[in-house]
Length: 251
Image (cartoon, rainbow, N blue to C red):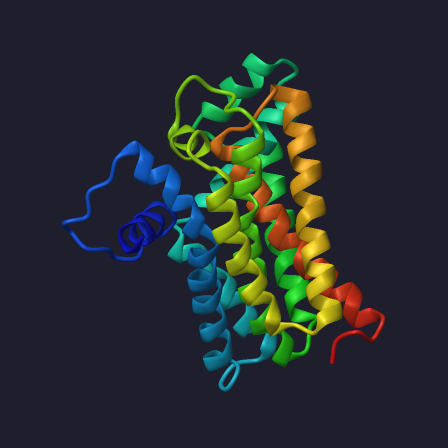
């Protein structure tokens, strides 16, 4: 289990892992159980940067640095998936064309706009929250965003014959979902019960709608689809937090 945690950490981040770490295709898939825990680490890193910097910088500047740091920890892995997905689904009308565009390493108009809007949205939403809530929502959102990989992989087929995402998708089962869900539920204690419930509902809604869309368009998922859902979930949770604040459910 410890080895699979390090495999998950290696797969999703740039953080160092033991050099002797060896993994099989089965290990990579089963390591998905620890993806939400990796989200705790990435979100916690961003939260720590925010808490430290807010002592010397204005709140928006601290939020910006926290977002940049989180993206640095993951090498922009999920952001890349977001851009590729929007290019593919925006520019392709058939499954084959969508998948072909997704494979193109160049970024197009749809992908560029998606990155701009999502990053600006995350910055704006977080900057609108009280300082005491920002670090909590960062940890919760990063954890929930990585949890979405589990149900999507378990219940949708992989749309390509090969790919990194397939190594994960074909191995995710009920045990991995249970472990990942327990991690998410434990992290939700950072929020009030009302906020936790809204966060859980928002995460489930984004996952469901994304899965239905991917199934309708390409009859399954790809690694880029998982990255896009990750980013949309984080975006959606920060938006939910702002709505809660507007109706006085956050202090």
